[in-house]
Image 1 (cartoon, rainbow, N blue to C red):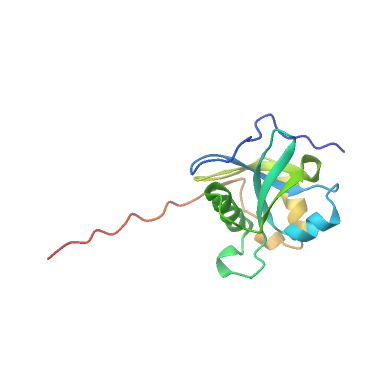
Image 2 (image 1 turned 135 degrees about the horizontal axis):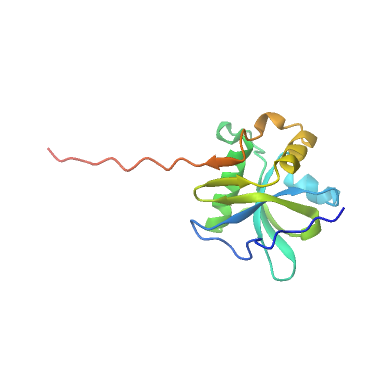
Length: 150
């Protein structure tokens, strides 16, 4: 089975409100790459001009309570990608190792291939972390509190 990326695959690092792609591993992924990203991980990234992908991933290796759901992991990986933060949770990979399942930006997540995402989470024994819907809106942070001088 051949997996092709969408014609609208982002081809550069997004800015704070920009769009990145969401990926899941394919059956063609090498075992050492899969061991690195870990099962159940959320993978975000963009395409490169040499037909590779730059990906950032989050698997909640340290069991943080705020990273239980898949969409929370995706948001953390996206924030790292946008800010170009130093991390070991990033790599350049071959396109055939990943299938694009949707998009993420600063406002939310759009999943276009829910069946592929569910298959990845089922293989990872992480179905309990699956998103409930194909559209996930991020709530904006609360406005800063005003300090009133007395």
